[in-house]
Image (cartoon, rainbow, N blue to C red; front, side, top):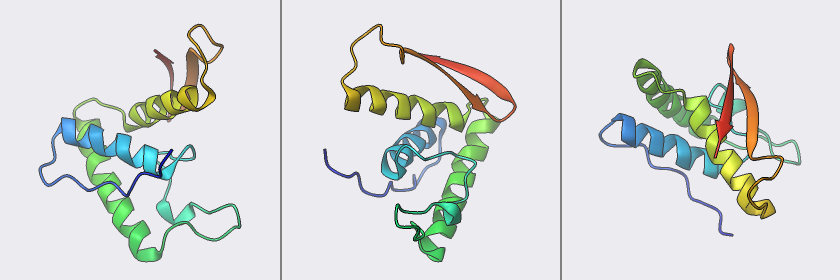
Length: 117
């Protein structure tokens, strides 16, 4: 499996392009991604920061723009990211249908959500 490259911030920001950006960002960052997390706080296994100050600032700004726009339209960025993480986990583990992970509950902010299929 190849490592995805950093997502490109959409030139024209729409719900569709924002959802695509969140999906790509989730795949790029990996399973620790959360839309509310500051990119300055991500660290590698060796304890070193994952992103430079400049890159963290850019990523925070881009994520804030798409998250705000999505939330304005009633779309939760957290739900998008967690759905991608779930599908990635299922693919990596090659779990067949009807696994215990078929339904995953997660907490995103103040609300609890359930992701199915």
